[in-house]
Length: 134
Image (tube, rainbow, N blue to C red; front, side, top):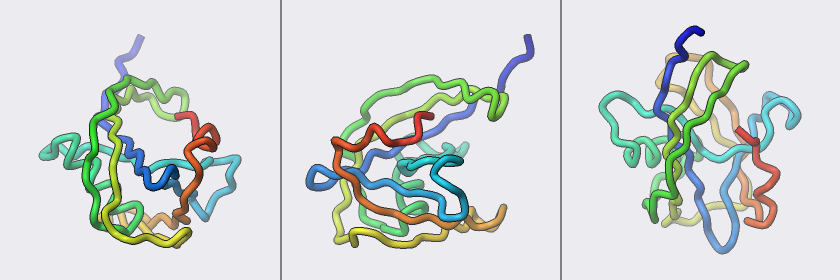
């Protein structure tokens, strides 16, 4: 058996007034990528908390978040998509600034790859079962 790469990741559950902030990739169908919460890799110089705040800002374009609490950690094998095991840190965040119901966002990825276009929006917490299962 070949060893899989282990990567540190964060997932951000941003909740306001009983609703969850989610996004979809506008360049792909729902069937391909689903609806997701802000998430991403932990950089070598970051704590998981710092990475969660950075990813929330980058993927939503909003800036004023605070961590309410850490919800836990989980290990997730994303094979066969990539030969990788992710150690995921999951956080509950609060947005402390106004936000529209729905907006477009372009993540630039520090210029290291092509930009990604998102549509951000709020869904009722009761509808969170529609999230991408990964």
